[in-house]
Amino acid sequence: MLPVVSADLDGNGIWDDNDRFGMVGYQDVVPIAMIGAGIRFTTKNADDIPEITFMSERTIRVWEQLTEFLFDETIYWSWSRTGMGNERSRQMFANNQALFNWNEFHSIPRLRAMETDFGILPMPLFDETQGRFFHHVNPHVAPMFSIPLSNPNIEETGAISDHLAVLGRQIMTPAYYEISLQGQHARDEESIMTMDLIFSSLTFDTGYMNNWGDLGSFTMHMYHNRQSDIVSEYERRVNVAQRQLDRMIDNFLDH
Image (cartoon, rainbow, N blue to C red; front, side):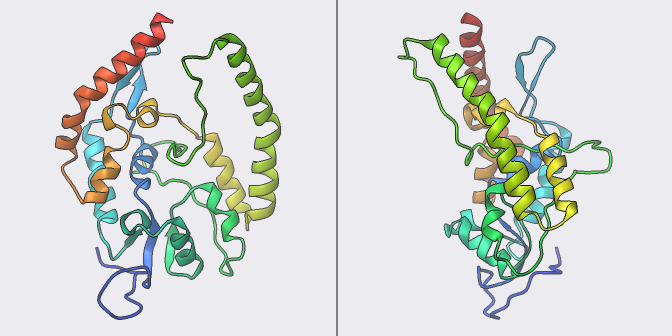
């Protein structure tokens, strides 16, 4: 690709955080962008049972187009490959060293002091035939809790956790979404509309979140290591992923 926005600002011939890029971000964008393009790691069948549905001709086309962009170090700068941390990518964006910054919503309040106006965009559609948007929570930064097997009061624990979830939905989510994100940090009406679109098109892919057999994270490793043969890497993992998925299904059905 021929860089349009990117520039070697210090003129030393080395593309690093002192230069300007088309986009800054990190490796987590890879599986989430693929889901955004309509790829599903798993899909539920007619019996409501998840099945692995990752590999297809579309998957290969999405991967090839995505990595053509992400593998170009003159266009995409990744803090996960450099080990500098997310704060550095936010600083670069605030310093006008990137046209786009791929990140989660938690980064928006941290850009409050940024002088240059910025807007919020959805994950892009892969092509004009896709029909709808897909947005996925990043499970690598999303907090969650687990209930240990040693818990003697499963039903009571389940009732309490359900009640807490309802209260969170009724109280915390509106406060965060309407008051903080939309009321305090969005800079234009278009960004507010985009947030509505994003939250209304949330999807949850169990294969990505549960990461059976490294199914959910192997594309991130491939990006990090500059590996391009997604078919071979997928085939190395799919049997283990299927066995772990089958074990989980059996455990659910037994209870």
